Image (cartoon, rainbow, N blue to C red; front, side):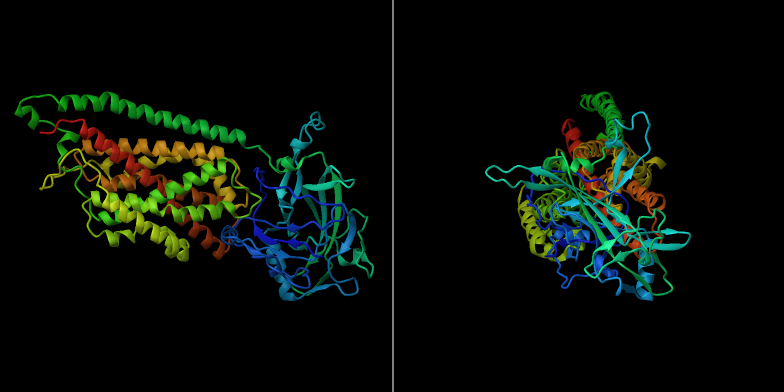
Amino acid sequence: MCPLVVLLLLLCHGVSCFYVPGVAPMNFQKNDPVEIKLTSSRTQLPYEYYSLPFCQPGKITYKAENLGEVLRGDRIVNTPFQVFMNAEKKCEVLCNVPNHPVVLTKEESQLMAERIQEDYYVHLIADNLPVASRLELPSNREEEEKNKEKDIQFEHGYRLGFTDSSKFYLHNHLSFILYYHREEVEGSHDPSYRVVRFEVIPQSFSLADLKADKKGACTLPEAPNTPPQEIDPAKENQLLFTYSVHWEESDIKWASRWDTYLTMSDVQIHWFSIINSVVVVFFLSGILSMIIIRTLRKDIANYNKEDDIEDTMEESGWKLVHGDVFRPPQYPMILSSMLGSGIQLFCMILIVIFVAMLGMLSPSSRGALMTTACFLFMFMGVFGGFSAGRLYRTLKGHRWKKGAFCVPFPTMLALLCMWFGISLPLVYLGYYFGFRKQPYDNPVRTNQIPRQIPEQRWYMNRFVGILMAGILPFGAMFIELFFIFSAIWENQFYYLFGFLFLVFIILVVSCSQISIVMVYFQLCAEDYRWWWRTFLVSGGSAFYVLIYAVFYFVNKLDIVEFIPSLLYFGYTALMVLSFWLLTGTIGFYAAYMFVRKIYAAVKID
């Protein structure tokens, strides 16, 4: 019986894994077949395992994937590996025999050498545990015996091969090391076993040094300096694929088995990120408090004094634009549609991060996080449509049926079928009820004749405002952004959702505060065109995210080909657009509430 194996080649580096409660353990009896699979995150350009000339079973069977797995690029397929619980295998040929080795054609050899040169990894899992290659780090000799576990880290998956002196070598022998925990079963003499760790030692042996009989049993060379299996891309190559299985008993219980893979060496960096973000937010809060307590209260007190007409004519500041501050902007339909999309994104991100922080999205369930995010984005369309419809009516819009179809345009780019089937009807429904609801009650009336706007200073330029307003929210979350990019582009599991939730709250607060400060200065300059400006300026941190993405591409990723680069910048553009909609919406509604509040506190004749 052939166990399932999911094998995928990915251009990536090591990964940290984690355990989330809620996944039922699987018990094995001695000699039971152990199901081996492979998992991976979507990287720049993933390939299926059988795109390379590896050994194949008699019948290749693909397992059905969920939506998240499809979007991530996971493929689950059976292989000829035979692994049985607590059954040792010293060495076994995976396919063919020495008299009939695997022959790679010139084209296949070129493809294999190309993948080795591009540093591709193969990722396996057994019982939902990812395979790992052990990396031992240097440590102090005095503490080496005390901190053995701390000096060991694991690299997710194993390298397809390696290069040396412009030659390519393939890892054609896999030494599997599986750890099990013995569970005593009441009323039974036979204990059950649970897999708690899955390691692999990839090795390379030339065909001449591998000795095997007709039954498939093989003997590995004992010499330490055995020549590896070279892959010459200029000719045909003959080789054997072999593997061995070794079982060891472990004291690690099933509930703690992910702790072995999880190295928390970056917790201090995360705490530094949180402290840094809190300092930034307190700094913004100080500025905002100074404006509100000292300046704004003084303005309101002066504006509410019953002075004579001459003093009133000499007034200047934000009160003078009270008759124009709520004048509908240009293109109200597009603005309300973008803000509706931002509300949709905000609700989806908030729920996903909160649920993941509580541990309800297990990493052992491949694609669960992405599937949840996609479906939540669809269903949050009703809230996006409702907020967009009500705002559109507030802005004196009348063509609500046309506006309703403008709200979820990011969804249409992602999943067209789900957009038509789920999101579009919900958005339409939400837009209908939002448009029928009473519009937002503005505290002052709008004049029929627009007020002339005085000439603005250079620092009130829109692009300058984007640069000024975006740097502080970006500074509050850029350290966390590094870990998010590593999880997306380097196939690392992101597991610190508690930190991410705190950073998200800090991002919301900082965007709101900087938006209030910017709209206050704009109104003081007697410029009442704040609707679009607030939305654009509040999303200024997306500009810095784009710059950081370019920096990350140049300094952290070794991508030289056109297609992976196109994928990277294509997905980055979608992320930057979504981030701009998110932060712009947060800043807009914060500024809108602030403007309504201050004009409600002023006596208008």
